[in-house]
Image (tube, rainbow, N blue to C red; front, side):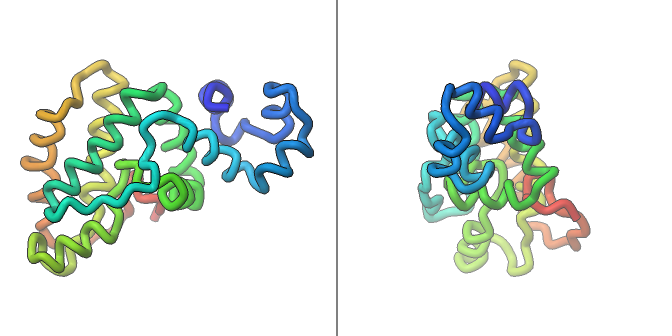
Length: 187
């Protein structure tokens, strides 16, 4: 299924195409998955290094950001980067898919779960009114761009990204007029 996603993109995947590729009948697939989203999520869950339903709560915003970037880095390292880019592109076109992936597979690291920012506000690490935009717009884009270009996105790089870019940006309260690229919302 993941090979098929890479070949034809999310929009090109159909129950008929998957059935043909798997040598199964469409009714067999429909008995297992109600929707294409369900089928794609099952394939993603079967991939190595997805969020796996884990909760991100290290006790600090910095630790949580590093953990989230670590999840994304694991996924990029263990998966076909083109597939990851294909899924993120599909999420841009279909915000419901992006939300569905985050809620069913666990945090992907491509966006900042609101609860992580809420806990940081409660701990006094960032002011009330902070928004996930900076993380949603920058974090996934930075790692994916580096992965696609064969550049390192190791622990040292991720720590520098958190310390020099994400923490300062998340602490700045500015009006947000657009959704981050990986936020699952295109307004």
